[in-house]
Length: 227
Image (cartoon, rainbow, N blue to C red):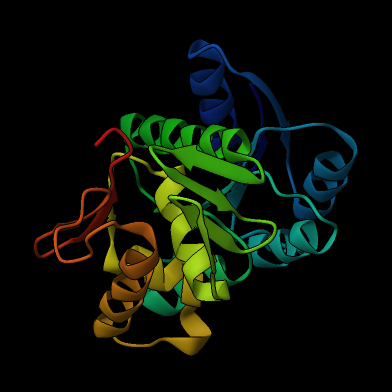
């Protein structure tokens, strides 16, 4: 796995690079936003660790430009700014996760592993996702079960894509709202439950006794593929 560290503070940059290399990653680094942006757009990377507070071109601007140029690798933002508005701006700019300084290197490595696993799952899903008697075509926005095809709305497709990327794991209601709806159009938690009911009507043989889209009480939902 190839990782890029964009961090203007030399001691922090060195510590990050050495820690990641010790875990077996191939790591390149850049000391400012423009250099990091250029490197990220000319070299192949699996993940970018991006500091927010940099002179000239900050991490928010770098991330927005990366997404504008079609770079889809995960971005983990690193910053001393921990206010909710800063976290929102980071995620809205296209970041996948946000880690506030000071942080432990153990937590950093766990976040990196989680983002890389998520990327691998998303790539493995491709355009069509199959399990049991169900086939979901994400490109067409359809779900087929027992020979009957149902159209999926944009939000239903996004929710199923997120569930498939985290199959067997609990996806919180907050995660659905963050990823599928986004912070600029923030509905209520009940909205997620209503959409789940609609998905179950298409996904389950008996929606009142779901076998695949399972409620995790007080938290969210989990996709079970083996039942």
